[in-house]
Amino acid sequence: MRSDEVSEVLNRPLSRELLARDLTRMGYVAQDGTPRTIPIAFTWNGTRIVLCTTKNAPKLPALRANPMVALTIDTEVHPPTILLVRGRAELDVVDGIPPEYLTMNGTYRMTAEQRVAWEAEVRSLYDGMVRIVVTPTWAKLIDFETTLPSAVEELVRRRAERQPAS
Image (tube, rainbow, N blue to C red; front, side):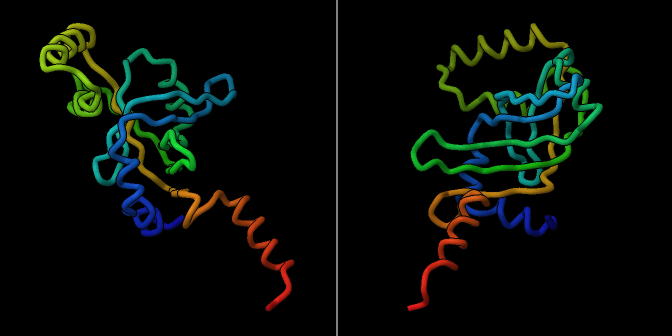
């Protein structure tokens, strides 16, 4: 998929709504060769998806060996709105807490006092983190009104081909 096509998908209003959410599921290949999918907080910086994790996270050696990931961001209603993104993860080890981590976790419902306590706990626990920066190389928005999963699109096309012309 060309980068302008990826940008067009990611700039659609429904995609922007999904990119403003706080949780995605990230798929990657573990070091033992088996697939993994994990829920993880994220933020969208306008061109890349940024996730943060501990420096000792088991996913890091796997991402160093194979940086290709797939992300799913979706809604919990029927029909769902789904944003599928594939891309390459770059790992950036940082001292302290990345600002993105504080931003992505700022959407959870916390009182001001809870937020202060949470941030103090985070700062006391982590001496550094790893930013996982995903550059999208492919994207698809599925809303079940204007876009469908590719297999369903194929079935709709086949049905139309079987229908007699009016």
